[in-house]
Image 1 (spheres, rainbow, N blue to C red):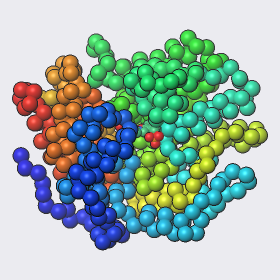
Image 2: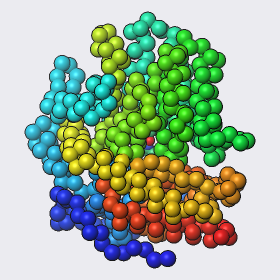
Image 3: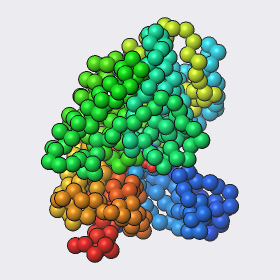
Image 4: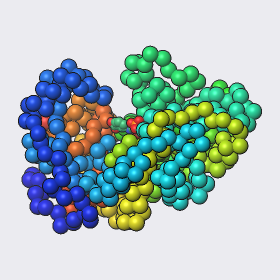
Length: 478
Ligand code: PXG
């Protein structure tokens, strides 16, 4: 198996000139030594990382990264699910540069505002589904979900329903790593390390068919049963005590778990029946990932609140937001002070970059291309390539996001007993093959920049096949 090496014909418009690409100022060994000496990485075992050393990424263009050893790596994860317009877009750099000179910072507290945050809010209202016309800003998805809790609480206070305090979320959901985000998420290993958790947050099971469906249930029956756990939980707590349900339309960090089509309509029915706010965490799904602007549109439901981050700025600068459905916005607007805000809420530079980014997504029809062209191509290519593969049990996804389930016996839906280790073996083969593909336990995840072309998709899929074949071979499975 050889890797595709030819350069792709597709050239991005308005890329940064190569002369502006950062130069490598130190040797890899020096970078690693300094990194080990002074930098604590997120979600890492620092002792073991410092013994091996990190890969040092020094520049990027389009869908490619380069490390300090000048290896060219294809980025199958769009950074961390965020670089939707790809790397090196000059329009975003120009927007930041201009804004930094004109007004690098001013706050949006104390009866003030500024043009970039006004333009961004109007543009988001244009791009989001019709009832979303108001946006609150923060710096990350985690802060977005903290904000969601504050809005939900304030909303029910304005309705005089003070007992509605519980928020229901899902096991293996991911909603960030602040105390509130981490509590909302369903990652047990994160809960264990928290000094305390936010009160009144409870979890139901996830709609993970391959791993958790028992008996002969169809995916649709299983998804319905998992959605109905919400109703059971509401009845257990009492509808008068439940404020909201939050979920990612598809779970990203949890393994690109795509629920069957029966799931979200049932969740929505239950939320409406018991007068519970429905929150879609669109931090990964938003801004085109599934081929729709927002993932809840792909699944056909209407949330009351949406959490946004990542693709909002394509990760060029940090920014998060919460979109409020008109019925929620009205209550917040009409009922006095909302006592929440961050120094950088609506930061002018982040807002200017977000505007430039959203205009690229809109004007270059990048989202439409994911829906009608590259998304279907990517999904078909993966399914054709891995049909009847000895260790691929399921391929989930739509548009430009996919999860590949590694399995000991795909037909019997039998997972590896040591699934996490198998995922790590596969991830290491990807790493050595200069492909970034994320492992979550025994699921391999892909979520490339939305500007990827078909040749680049072919390259990702060929490299993924090489890594998965090599994994099977190492396990002695053929
Ligand atoms: N919600 C969702 C759905 C996310 O995926 C957050 C909230 C939190 O966003 P911030 O910006 O606070 O990180 C996320 C973040 C991974 C990985 O390993 C995923 C995320 C972050 C870091 C790692 O897949 N998602």
